[in-house]
Image (cartoon, rainbow, N blue to C red):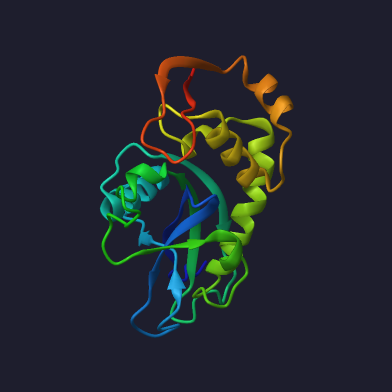
Amino acid sequence: MKNDKMLISMDVVICTMLDESLQVVVRRRDKAPYAGRFELPGVYLKGDESLKEGSRRCVRELTGIKDAYMEQMHTFGEVKRDSRERTISITYVALIPASQLVDDEGYLVIDDVELVDMSEMAGSKKMAFDHGKIIAKTLDWFAAKAQVSEIAFNLVDEEFTLPDLQKAYELLLGKPLFKANFRNKMKGVIEETDYMTVGEAHRPSRLFTRK
């Protein structure tokens, strides 16, 4: 039986919550195909590493972050998704608080990448290859995953305000939530600290942590 050569790419949708929107880390391609378009960060899987190791290497080499929340999202294997060579993309999602990606003035601390709004890039031809489809699939995955898990906590810092946590849930679910219902649902999974936010334009807010 003939074994045709295939490449395995570990592509990672690195997401954060910034300016009240879900944003994704992208790079701009400087060569064909799709020169000038955005692409998701990715690496080719090495022969001696697992899928999780490959995806973590991608995030570590790009951001320096070793302990980001990551989960396998989907496999994309259309025959002609890459015109150069048959490439299977095993896609992981990484959720990282904005404080680890941008400085106090809102500038990215990672070189040669950009943060763009996920909803604007979903299905967009501004993305190279099928990466616009990957982002659209990720948004659907978020909406389902946030219904049955607590992944939204990975978008906020260890200490967070309830409005920030609610916004993280709303962005992942893709819909607004009633404040009273949300806070009642969170009672069993969060606890308040003795600290308040400082140095912000609005009145100080209580900080909470995850139980």
